[in-house]
Image (tube, rainbow over all chains, first blue to last red; front, top):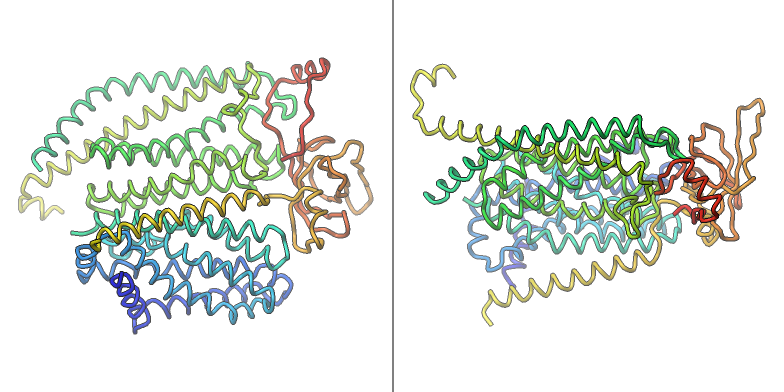
Length: 222
Length: 251
Length: 153
């Protein structure tokens, strides 16, 4: 079990080091939101209406651009072979990698949300549904995304391919996540159902992603 | 390694023999069923009590939508077969089904859009059925993109198979989306508890066009599988014969 | 217990717990309603009238369609019902789909402009899963075995 946490600690440390993906992802998140805000213009009512979809889409895109970092560097420097050889159950290692990705991107994006939400006129109680939905949904994004990263681990410049593969798989999380955040802010009773389905999607991703990632990694080792 | 390559050689040869005979048969069957189906659909079937003549779009739309799901299921099953029995033809079948399935999905979306405008009043609506079929289309595209991106065919087959199996979750969502959510799209009319809710005069042409689509799929699949096998044999022969200096210069 | 067995146990335990959680959450969500559209009854149950655009689904009530051909353009208004006590009056300026008629299922996109009043941006007609020739539909109606649609869900 200590190996599990060691992998997480190592990956998180790498992500925050110079050249790591964590700060890039959160900067990208902030920039996308700013660009959206500039495009929308000064209509504050419209802004708070579309805040949840904009923040959710931006979080999804920021996750997407950081996915290439999950497995490819490890495969290039050979540490993926070491990981695969030393881990007793490869699926648990894959789960640890996805968890590390969530801590260094998803959790970071969630933490940055209260400040960035101000740009879209979201503050006070309307913020909570957004934060809660990101907290439940972002792990799902990292899990599904790390599966696509495992599929393409052996390919150089796989960023666009990962985006094409993973976008349809992200649909339920985006629909229920943004749906829950919007419904929660509007006091809509569908809030609970959306959150539950978002949680179910993340849990479902937690089951299939480590197993499928492990299978994909086996074929991507030399 | 010797055993697998023998296996790989032996099976495609038998496949080639069967496919050479089955291809024209299925092509003719598709053409005949399609001609009959279109005749009944356009000239010899009643207009609907509510939709009038527009209902005739059903005869191209419904089979396309079914084939979209059928092709994905066939792709996922071949992928599983490729894993379990390591049958090389299963991988080729899965790979060659994808573009055909994507074409059927596009046709279903396109004809659905043409049908939606006069009946619902909108080309497109983000309801559960339409959204999940659109996602199916993108799943096909992702699968095809993955195949194209990986140069090593054996590795590509395995990795694409994993993706196809994971993406299969979408198929039951498409099927039951109209029952789980109250959607704009109407519920199932043919495959439903309590028998079809389509009048027999309209069901007959529908079965003809469905038959045409199925045989059309078989014909296209056989043709593209033969193409793929020949291309692979060519690639093997090219890599087996040592390149002469002249050929290197030509390139 | 060796580490490999222990890890396997953690893996299968984790899968089982996650699967149970996913199923429980889905069942909970399906028990509540996650909807493409609200019916008038569902709308009446809300604590406050939603201010953002919504979709409303139901049947066009019989003898409720009124056309107002003022110089501002054709405006149609009709009542949407779902068999319950609550109804919504819809005002719409625009093109109605072919299938729009009294008794037909519709999905209306627009904003609530008052209690039980809605201004529509778009009206979509739902059609049901029954396909039959006109003569058959009439014969069924004559024989009295015709079953009117339930709520457009």
